Length: 112
Image (cartoon, rainbow, N blue to C red; front, side):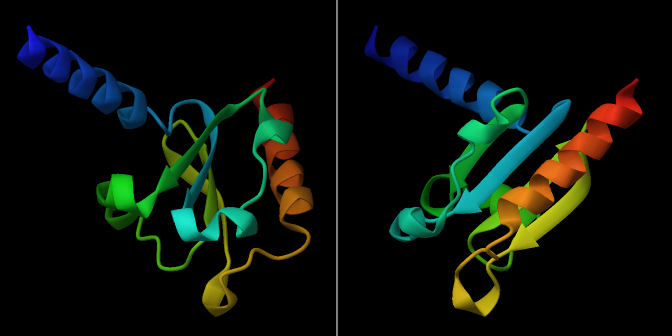
């Protein structure tokens, strides 16, 4: 029984994070020691939002070629539409939310 629970748990985790780029998604790549440098994704709740930590999801960091933390990427059906990162300072630009909102508004208007 214990093994079944572990397998189901792993399957659920794989499925949920395997779909992190579906539709319009805002994904924040970060590390636990940078929590205070992250932005809140609550402002984008109408979209798919995920925060992935390098300690738990390093595979996705490699696949997406994330070089700096934090990094926020907007996807549209799996394609990268916009990317912004903290660079060497490990801090996102002050206007990050504004830039994200601009690109998300454009995506939404192009959808119709």
